[in-house]
Amino acid sequence: MFNKRTKIKALLELAPSETQEYTVMGWVRTFRNNQFVALNDGSTINNLQVVVPLGLVDDALLKRITTGASIKAQGKLVASLGKGQKVELNATTIEILGDSDPEKYPLQPKKHSLEFLREIAHLRFRTQTFSSVFRIRHALAFAVHQFFNEKGFVYLHTPIVTSSDAEGAGEMFRVTTLPLENAPKKEDGSIDYTQDFFGKSTNLTVSGQLEGELGATALGEIYTFGPTFRAENSNTTRHLAEFWMIEPEMAFNDIYDNMDLAEEFIQYLIKYVMEHNADDLAFLDNRLKEEEKSLPMDKRNEFGLIEKLQIVLNNKFERITYTEAIEILLASPAYKKKKFKYDVSWGIDLQSEHERYLVEKHFKKPVIVTGYPKDIKAFYMRQNDDGKTVAAMDILAPGIGEIVGGSQREERLDLLLARMAEVGIPSHEMEFYLDTRRFGSVPHSGFGLGFERMVLFVTGMTNIRDVIPFARTPKNCEF
Image (tube, rainbow, N blue to C red):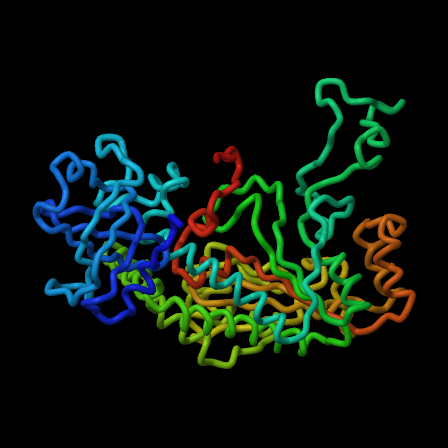
C-alpha cells in the first residue's frame, strides 16, 4: 500500500525513537543548505524538519527539492538540535512525488498580500494563514453539528431551489431552463414561467427558515446548515453572494429561550476551537498583532484575537432593548462629538459602527439587543403588545457587530395575516406556512448565524472573502 504514512501533526507529538521508522509525505515549504526540508502536509500549521544527510541523494534529485514540490520521506524520528522544533526526521530515503518549477511557482517563501492570494485562491490553502483559517472553519462546522446533535436537534436539509422569498428582500438569483434569447411570453409580454422546468418562477434560496419552521412544528427542534444566496450588488468586506447559514428552529420556545440557546451555541463553538485549534489560533493571533503594528492607534483593535474570544467565552452576554440601545448611543461621547457616520434616532436600523460602540466601548462584552421596531424587521416576527416593536433579537460581538439575528415567530394566525397584508405578501403564496398556525400552532422561535461571519470572528480575518474557499461576489465567479 502506497499511503502508509504518518501525518505530521501526529508525528510532532511523538517521542524520538531509535528503532521505529516513519514515512511522511507533504509539500516543501523551504529547503535550506541542501540539507534541511521544512515539510507540511496540511494536518497542522507546524512544519516537520526533514534532514537530508549529505550524500543520501544525488545532485539531480537535490535540485528537485524546491518550494511547492511534494515529497515522500522515510527515516527515524530524532531529537532536534536546532531551534523551533523538538523532533525532526532523519531521512534514509527521499522520493519526489511531484515537481514544482521554482521560476513559476507563485508562493515563494516570502510575505504575500491577501489581495494577491485571492487571485490564486486555488493555491492559497498552502500558506500558513489560509491553512489555519480553513482548519478552523472545519472545526467550527464539526462543532455546529456536535452541539445540535448533543441537544437532540434534527438536521433538516432545506431546499436550495425555492419559489418563496423568506426575507421579502427580492434580491434573489433566478433559476430557469428557459432560453434567455427567446423566452416564451404571455399575452401581456411577461415571461411565461408555466413553460419553465418547475412550471413557475423559482430562485436560489436566501434562507431555510420557513421550511425549518415546518419541520420544527412536527419534530420539535431542527437546524439547517447549508448554502444560501443573495443577489445583492454589494462589494464590501462583509458580504458574499453565496454563503452558508446555520438556522435552528425550536417549537415551544420563546424569545428568552432563543437568546439562551444562541448564547450557549456561540460559546460552545469558541470553546471547541480554542481546545482543538490552539496552534492555529496562536498563529493568527500573532499575525493580527503584526498586521496592526503598521496601523495608527485609533485603527487598532482594542483586544487581541485570543483575548477577544476569551471575553466572549467568559462573560454573560449583556441584554438590552433596542430603545435602551438608542438611548445609550444618543448619550455617548461619540454621538455628541459627531464621530458616527450614520445618524442615531429611534426607528433606524443600527449600523455596524453603532453595534460595535455598544459592544467595544460601552459594555466591553457581547450584547443581545431585543425589541426592534417592527417596520425594520421581517413579517414573521412576533409582534409585541406595544404595537411598535417585535420580539426580535440580534447578538452583537466585538470586532464585527451583528453575528446572530433571530426572533420569536408570530404564531397567531390573525396577526400574521394582518402583517403579511401590511407588507404586501400574498397569503395565497404562503398557505403551506400558514397551515402551521391553523393546525396546532405553538410559540416557537429561531435564529440565523452566518457561518462565514462566525469564521471571520474566530480567525480575526478582516475580509469575508478570506474565510470561504472560493468567494462568490459581484463580477467574480472564478474557480
